[in-house]
Length: 187
Image 1 (cartoon, rainbow, N blue to C red):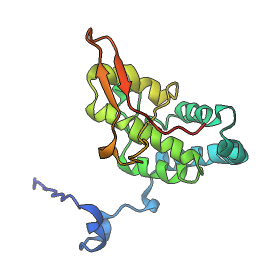
Image 2: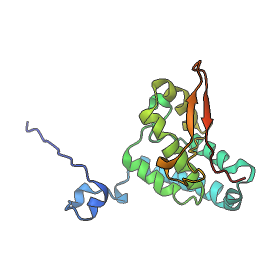
Image 3: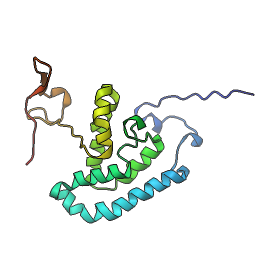
Image 4: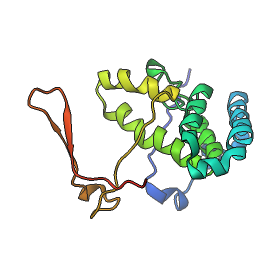
C-alpha cells in the first residue's frame, strides 16, 4: 500500500491573498456537513427569537440582558465549541467554529460580548492557565454561569496593553492578590 504524505505550510498574516493555492485546499460554506448546518440553524433561531427582538434592551444594557443571553448560548453549547470536553466543552473543528462565528457576527453588539467571553476571556485560561485554573473556571465559562471580562483600558494608556500600569501583587501569606492602578469605567 502506498503511503500518502500530506505537507501543510503555515500561511502568515495576509499571505493568503498573494500566495498560490489550489481550490481544493480552501473550505467553502457549501462543504458544511449536516451537523454544522444544524448548528447554524440553531444559532439563527436564537438570533431570530432572542437577540433581534431585544436589540434595544441589549444596547441600553437593560437588566443585565447580555449576561442572560450569554447563559443561553452556554445552554446551546456554543460557548464551549473550542474548549476540550475535559473542561465542559465540545472541541469542535475550526470550520465549525468559523460557522458559529459567522452566525454570532449577526448579533449586533451581543457579538462583542460573545467574542470577548470566548476569546480574550476563555482562551488565555485554556492556553496558559494551570490545570487547577482550567478545572475551576472553564466549566463555568463554558456553561455561561460565569462571565469572562478583560479590563484593559486605563487613564493615560488607553487600550495599549504594554503601557498599562495596573499590577496584581500577591499578599505575603500567598492567600490573595491586591490590585493596584486604575481602570476606566463607564457607569
